[in-house]
Image 1 (tube, rainbow, N blue to C red):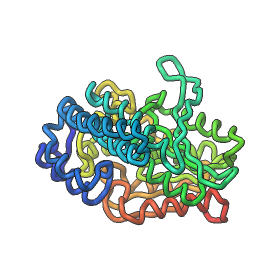
Image 2: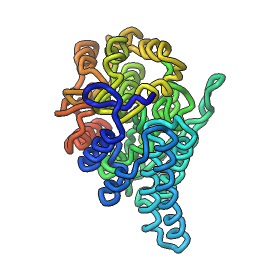
Image 3: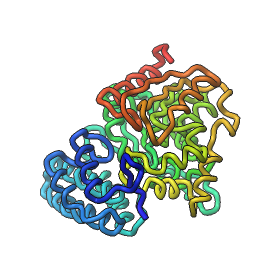
Length: 382
């Protein structure tokens, strides 16, 4: 059964899901900010079902139509129009694979999302360059880490922010953060969170290996100032930003945990309480299971618990400058984890916003970007 949620903690009906989507479309918040305001309402009204086959096939067909128009525009030499259409198609395919590709129709959308995103991004003023970095994976793991790199104009060796999403936002959803940092003269490198997208590993306790591989690659680039970089972990991905800030503080100018956990989030009582948060559309538990590589509910609970940074003995160690950001009423990640982090180890910065998960307001991303820009430029603030 799907894990769609409502305020009452039960799965959403299709009608309730459509209301939820329409509200988020108007507010321009994840995941509905992938859709244009003009066509979005009609597309949402047309959703035939929340099961994987209905959902993936519906959004995938819409994406196919727009992608065909994009290819025609590109062939005709209308590159600006083609880029616009490819980006619209990528947003539709994103919806088709959301929150995770747990059906063949959704898996097809996931692959098409990446293809159309790159097709659009090659025409941007600061285009995306995809790099496949070799990774020493173990048996059953992958052998490369996919990085999407963008450079600001007019800088020979810019500072860098490495970023990733949570359980349902992949590197392709980091565009807004990249745009804001590029405008500040900062290069961006986007990758997939452990257990999502093209990540070669699941969300195992030592999945920091993939992020360290990306950091090693950045440090080796002569045209990037990668000795001490910024990190931005969004939603669940904030967990890994926090862990890396404690593991390799000397390599990090500043790290942001934007809505991620540290210890309380992974305890059984919170796992049970957060199965059906009102901030989530559907399939949260299944999406988390896929990220962790858990086969059933017992493994899901056990695998979560082993991620605790407190139990790993990290929180009393010195850490890099760390900014903790969330919404005060978050039901996906407990605010208690922020209280835990500020009471252990090095001092941290905290910014809480109104609302639920991630504190999504018009001021949230600019606040994060301002802080990261100061950190990577070593302007003397934590």
